[in-house]
Image (cartoon, rainbow, N blue to C red; front, side):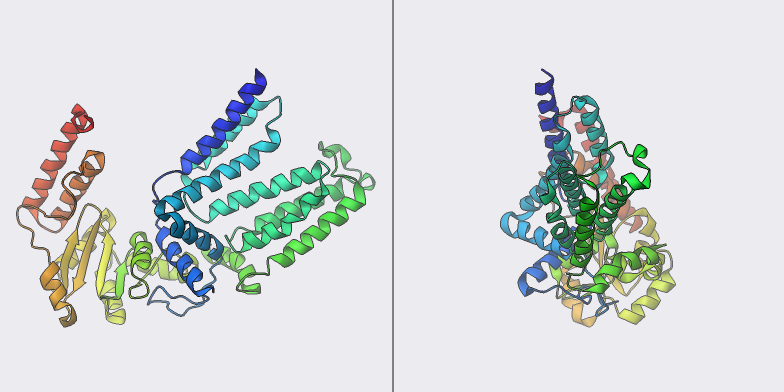
Length: 421
């Protein structure tokens, strides 16, 4: 009976891990990483300079996640967005499979699976299609291989340098792999009879004495050399450490970080953005300056004179409401789109006069959008409510009242259950 329960729990945890990553792609980094993967796939080379922005275009770019981006694009190329969702869910399921498999035959399965469930819930907010999924996978795989080695399977050390080679080209947290390997080597040294610390090590030493130390040392040295095999050589190695230190049509888009990834995916190379989520490229000072532009209209105008923005595309968060209102009052900008999340302004330039004539929004008592009327449910309720707020910011009061009334009607229908019949 215990064996059956253990297997049920094992399958349950793996299935839950898969399902917790099987969701809509919601990460703001997804699209620029997808475009980067496409470029790597098509050119068979990894960019070493920024190609997406006009503010830091040509600046050295250490893309330590290029292998992840390539895998992401291949999954998209094969099965579209569904393939990307399956990739993320599969990586998560395999990770917890590697964590649980060595312990699956333990008689203490209740506590093992309980802690596994807690760990899964603890990282649930990070179970998105991001490069750290590769770090989770490689970390679990390294620990699994070291478990096999401790069990007497000496061959288990051979794949570790290859693992580090893949890790260094997928995510910047690869130093964790070397740290774990070093910790196991130090443990083995301290457990030697001559050192006199055996009583502090409950686990039996890996195979026996000096030979194991030699094998682990060779594995560590080869792994350290393997991380040099990346498109940037030694620069790719020191980059994560440098980053940690530093952290203490229209073609020029001023956009917020949340939207820029999608614009890169949809419009590169024709579209260039002011900023995007690659914090390591822009640096802390630039990001702080960018954030200040939403509250400092004069600073934005100065930046506009410097770069001559063509289009402003921002998520209409409350933090930027004053910024949006100033754009709406300015004769230099024309409102061409608004919905429950985003607002788009096009600069009044002679080269864009036809575009402005065709797309300038003329909002009367009611907002007309391209969204199908059949869309309903909680999503549409929030969309209507947020539209009302944005229209108030833009001083379209009658249209805002109409949106609020529609949101209220949907709320009443949602509570009555009519939306689900």
